[in-house]
Amino acid sequence: MTETPAVDFGMYVTMLGSQASIALGLMPNPMTEQTETDLSTAKYLIDVLDMLKAKTEGNRTDVETKVLMGLLFDLRMKYVEASRTEAVGDAEGE
Image (cartoon, rainbow, N blue to C red; front, side, top):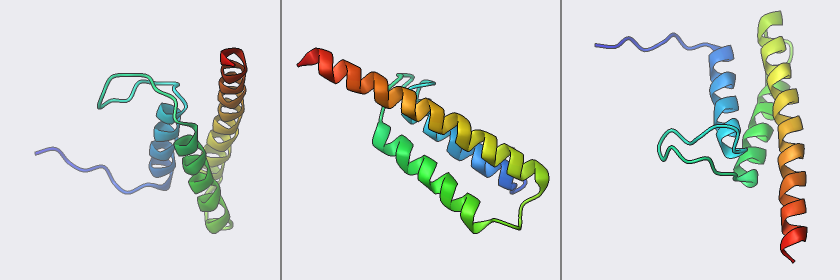
């Protein structure tokens, strides 16, 4: 029998970050093996991570804070990039 990993804040936010990366089209969906972009889902997951940041303020270790802040920064930058790419594609399709 496979052991379930221990519950860990860093692992949890990383899991949410992976889901956001899939929604941003940065990695294939493991269920379909297709790369798809779903900006509304990506934004939702980034907002969830931001909410966790606010709700856990003062209760995170330095390492947890670095992981969360780095993940949020990277995902936000990728979201902006994906939004611009989608906007350019929409404009070219008109």
